[in-house]
Image (cartoon, rainbow, N blue to C red; front, side, top):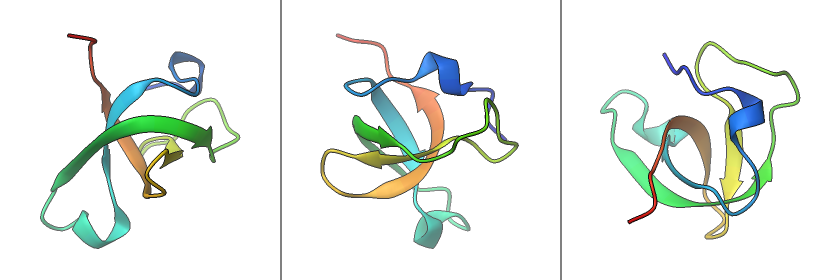
Length: 66
């Protein structure tokens, strides 16, 4: 369950995602958003994005800049 809205995201945003293969374990991957793949404003499992690294997953949280 994610409470991140599509409007909260834009290319360049640092996020934590869960990839499809890691859904059972809940392992998170950090990265920077390249593309937003979900077109709806919200999604119950998180907005799907592609990271600059090429990894695809659903956003679990937005990482605050250091």
